[in-house]
Amino acid sequence: MSEEASCQSEEWLTRALAGDAAAFGMLVRTHQRSVFSLALRMVSDRQKAEDLAQEVFLQLHRNLAAIESGAHLAFWLRKVTLNRSIDRLRREPKLEAMPLDAADGVVSEAEDADPLLARRLSTLVAQLPAAPRAVLLLRYQEDLDPTEIARTLGMSVNTVKSHLKRSLSLLRERFADTARSST
Amino acid sequence: MITANLNYPTRTVLARRVLLTLLPTLALLARLASAAPLAPLKLPDFESLTGKATQSVNITLDSNLLGLAASFLDSDKPEDAAAKELIAGLQGVYVRSFTFDRDFAYSMTDVDAVRRQLVAPGWQRLVGVRSGKEKANVDIYISVDAGRANGLAIISSEPRQLTIVNIVGSIDLQKLHKLEGKFGIPKLQLEEGK
Amino acid sequence: MSNDLDNDLRAALRPVDPGERFTQSVLARVATESTRSARAPKLHTTTLRWTSVALAISLVMGIVVAHQWQVRRTQRGLEARQQLIQALQLTGEKLDLAYRVVNDEQPTQSAAEPGA
Image (cartoon, rainbow over all chains, first blue to last red; front, side, top):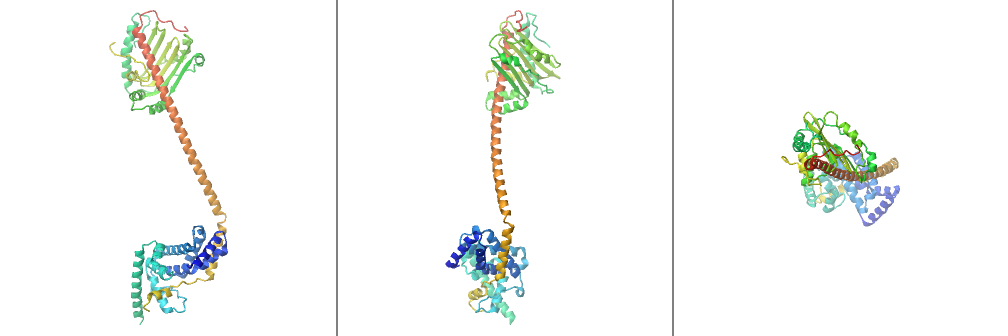
């Protein structure tokens, strides 16, 4: 989060804490992409992801007083979203074992993105176990470094690096397999 | 039951024999398991005496209070330990004592209500001594049930002091003897053979 | 797949906006929750506060009462001990008196009974 965005978040935080619904609305709009996308790529179901993301923001509204800064807000939202997602996957294991063609992959909005490639990669990521998947999302969706990922997920930096290495290796292998099978 | 017969010159000898032989016998009886619990004597208020006395002692210790008192006796101190042992079989200790500043400010009719209870079945006068020199009279009663002592009563009248003691339960006078010299208890000199 | 997996993953995993409908749903739920819990939380907080106060007072009173009971019990116990000792003293005195009378008394006429 840029410094300017962080300052703006803090202003909205202060106003939201004072009961300003519009300020809270701004906070939601600023962070809903991150929260929803994390939830979606963890639970692989749009409806469930929306519900989960809404729950996260409701929880935020109840705990506004605990948020110390804009940066803390971003950290808090990621952490809570992933915790709730992992809990959800534990309760519904079938969500985790989503077959390749049934995965509700989300196509990137980037104009330069290859939609097919993006879909394939999203699907492969959705097939990873919960912990390495969360690491990958924080790395490539949220652009966090291993130390920030470790702090968010409560893991050691070495574990984060290990997950990244294995996950990337697995993605290459599976992508190669899918490419071979489609030809 | 041998009692001191006041009308014979040998009463002193007899009384001594009673004290020297019967009190240990009483102690022996008392060491046996206590008989059926005895009700304490109904001691009057003695309001009239309280008004005349320079000092009044009114002690009523039922089994609860005896238990409480026992818990404040220090078993590490020999005198406390001896007292604890003595009261172990007791159900009650009741004392009324009045001290006056002139001779015979009280009347023996004041204790008639107590004496009447001591003629009831079960009670026996163990010793009754009359002292011309000290002008003191002491009557010691025991209550015996099925051959076991379960109560003691003492009525002591001296020129300037009247004392009534009622002990309910099995009292071992030899244990009381052990307390002599302690807590200010006078030496009882209950030596056998004397 | 390009050799640059990192870039491909970043592109594939760019965040997706759930839309304004999502935002409005969140705000609607927040508003509903705020209205529903407008009184309840206060009541809950107030009740909790008073319960805590009552509990604290009860605890303090309990400690005070227990302490007073202990003080009274100690007083009664020490009094009872003192009375017991006095009773034993008097009993011993009178037994000793009887013994003395028996031991030391010269055979004489019976002592005049007081008040007779």
